Structures are given as C-alpha cells and as structure tokens.
Amino acid sequence: MQNMTEIISQIISTCSLSVCDLIFNAHRRTNTANTMGLGSSHPKPFPGDILEFPRNKYFSHFGIYYGERDGVPYVAHLTCRDSETKLLLFGRALKSEVKLDPVEVVGQRYKVRNMLDEIHSPRDFYTVVKPAIDDMMGKDITFDILFHNSEHQATLFRYGLKKSTQIEKVYIQILPTWKELFKKRKL
Image (cartoon, rainbow, N blue to C red):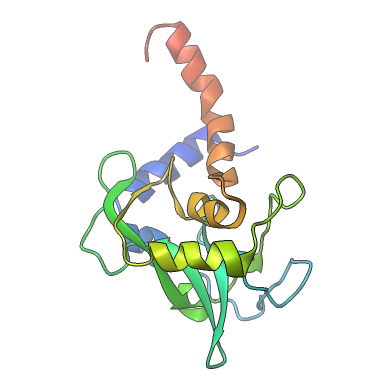
C-alpha cells in the first residue's frame, strides 16, 4: 500500500503543471525494451482497444486505438497539448479536446488495457466508437483530473461509461483520512 502523503504530494505537484506537461511530458519513459503491447493478451492493438501510457508511478495517460493511416498507428485521446490552458485549482483545465495522434507521439511505451471487458461489453468500434470519436474531435471539453481525465474519456468511448481505476486507487488511500477529519469536524 502506497503512502498517502506520497499520493497527495503527487496530486499537488501534478496540479501545478500545465495539462500539456501532465499528459504528454511528465515523467515520459522512453525505454525501448518495453515494446508495443507488452503485458497485453494480444501484442498488436485492435481498433477500439484502450491503450495505457505510463507517466509516473501513480498516473497513466489513456486513449483509444483508432487504427492505422498510411501504415501509422493512431490513438484518440483527451488532451490540451496545443492549448494555452493551465491546470487550475483542483486539477481542472477549461479547454481540452479529443485529438487523433500517432501512437508514438503520445508515448513510446504502452499496453492494451481493456480493464472492464469482463464486466461490461465493449461497444462496436465502427458503428459506435469511431463515430463518437469523430464527433468529439475539436470540441472543447473540460479536463478534470478527478472526474473527467483521459481514462474516463477512453472508458466512455469503449464502454459507454466513465470510470478511472487510477483515481479510485487514490480515493481508497485518502478517503479514510478524510472521513476521520470529517468526524473530528476538521474538514
């Protein structure tokens, strides 16, 4: 179990960065020994698969594998990389959007992580997910590290519901402390 102080420190330090830094550049690992699909049930992703790009020991960036264009694999993901938006209080950015980028631009290391397939049926990529991605591209979306991050967006596309397992892990760590402070009327 991770130290709650480390988790809170990571959240606080993350919130002082721009969303661009948080999502794309923070703690990028370029270890080429970890290749595409490492740790997944199938090394080559299929359109509609969720790709996880590790950023640091607490957080990852997520997107939906979109397929190839001219032999280049693409991922659709929630980002504000090209925006001037900075993370405001509580990890929010007012302007972010779904973008389509080559997988290698988003990260050198990733794995297929269809984490809810055993609980929820994935939606059909060509009739539901791809049109939803195409419709969302270029529209302003509010990024919120707790309620609407890249993992929420990826699960929303794939399953039709927003879920972030990495944020749930943070809640598990901090909820007992918050509960105790609330009981003592200090929160």
